[in-house]
Amino acid sequence: MLDAQKDTNRKLQDTDRKLNQLEKPFTSQWGKLMESLVEGDLVNLLIQRGIPIADTTTRLKGKQPGGGNYEFDIIAHNGEEMFLISQHTRAG
Image (cartoon, helix red, strand yellow):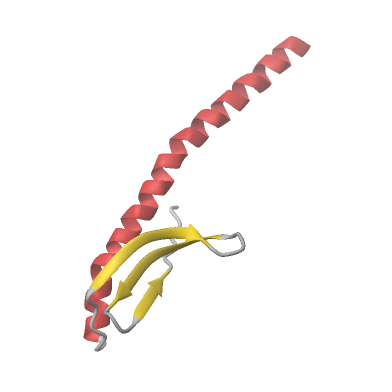
């Protein structure tokens, strides 16, 4: 009986690993889709509010001096002003 329980536990762990692998592409693609949708309307939204935007940059990543990492989802700028947008979405 102990061998059967070990076999069941191994199969459950294998199933969990496979499900996690399947979930990863969906969640990363979901984030990219949402950022794309936000970016698409962002320029028009800011311009309607009297803020001229020349360009946007997405997914800017880097390291801070002293250690930590950072990521800006969207940066909208016009040569004088810069707007940092952090977009969060949950599926489900």
